[in-house]
Image (cartoon, rainbow, N blue to C red):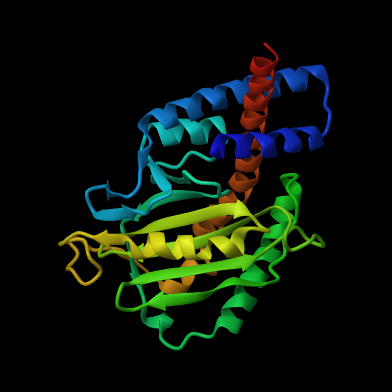
Length: 291
């Protein structure tokens, strides 16, 4: 049933894709075939919930019913086939096994201590203003790269830091400049802080559907638990770089800003790549029916 649902979406989306030259279409088909192979490899190693996954020997993650986990290297092969920026911090992917349209990338960022002091009494309006300014500042670079300019409109998920669990979740409504708020893709960012780094869970979905997936992002974050010796309150084994928790929302350093921009670019490529491979599957299914 889920496969038929995806195939129907792919068939409609494929019809809406702009027409290009034959050489470009051939290259697109080749890439889609590579992506299809990556998807098939992912299906073979998919761990379906309910279950528990161990992440980097530092934490465990509960998989609810209707979700699944794809390990490395299969997750990385899929990301490469989708032109997702290479990132050694990617540990795997979470995917739906029911009729939903999202994916969660799991990263681990090591060698940094996040100071959560600023989370006490922070002002969401001030954070939104900083995020808007950072996004506008990055538009010149996006234009040079031929990417669409973005604008932050409002919070999709207001920043919330759970002091007891040492987790942060937030998301912004950030469509293309002048575009509709429910067009394109949207991200919901979740962070689980440890003593020598943090896990980053980034849920990506169509913007129009993103609000309905906020509970899913929250459930994954709540289900991630550091093991003893890796918890936020445990002593670190070495001296670490210290960053404020607000840097996970409105980054001020060039490295963090580049990471945020890479996410936005990757999300668009991810959507196009998925539509391409699903379109091939739809064509194959139609041919099989005709036989």
